[in-house]
Image 1 (cartoon, rainbow, N blue to C red):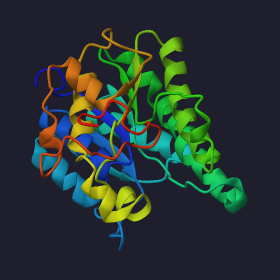
Image 2: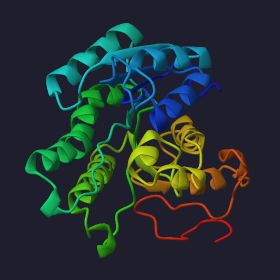
Image 3: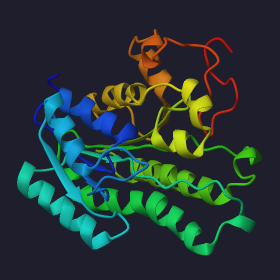
Length: 281
C-alpha cells in the first residue's frame, strides 16, 4: 500500500467501467484521484456520473477530485490539471482512459465521427499527457498509463474500422513516443486480453451474449495497480496485456475476474486474435 499512499493520479474519464475500477483500485492503495469526465447528469444508457464515481472512489479509501469537462478542450484540460495541482499538491500518475468507439467503415462513417475518434482518442491522450508532463517530471514516481492496444500490422484490424484503429494505435504511439523522449517517466500501455463487462460491450459489441463471455473491469484495474505501484525504472515503453502483468506478479488464478469463475470460452477483446493467450481455448 505504501507505494501509492499520498500519490496523485490524474485520469481522463473515470465515471464508469474500467476507468472507475482503476480509480477505486488506486484509491484503495491510498492514492488521490482527480478525474475529468463529461457525465455531470445521469445518462439513460450509461451508469454513473462524476459525482457517483467520486463517492465510490472515496469509499474505497482515497480522496477524489471530480472535474466536469471534455478532454477535446485543451484549455479546459490545462485548467483541470492546474486545479488538481492546487488541490492535491502535484501529479504523479497520468491515466489516459477516456476513449470513443465507432467501428463503422469509411463508407458509413461521416467525417465528423472520424474527427471525434481522433480528437478523443489520439489527440485527447496527447493533450492530457502534455498538460500533466511538467508535474510528472517533478515527481519521483512519474507514470503514464494509456489504455490502448499493442501495435499490429494485421490487416484484419483495418477492415471495416480503420478510423477507430488509427485512433487507438495513435494512443499507443504517443505513449511509446513519450517513453523514448522522457526517460525519467515510465510510459506504458495496457490492454485487456478478453472483452470486459462494460457499457460499451453491452450496448455496442454483442450485448448479453458477449457480456457472459467477458471478465470484470477489476482485472484491468489490478494490472494497472501492478504497473503504477512499481518503480518507474522497472518498465517503460511497453504495450502490456492485463493477464501477462498479473502473471508476472504471481497471479495465475483469473477465475475471480468472472462472476461464474469462467476461465475458458472467453471472448477476446478487440485487437486480440481469437484464442490468443486465452486459457482453455
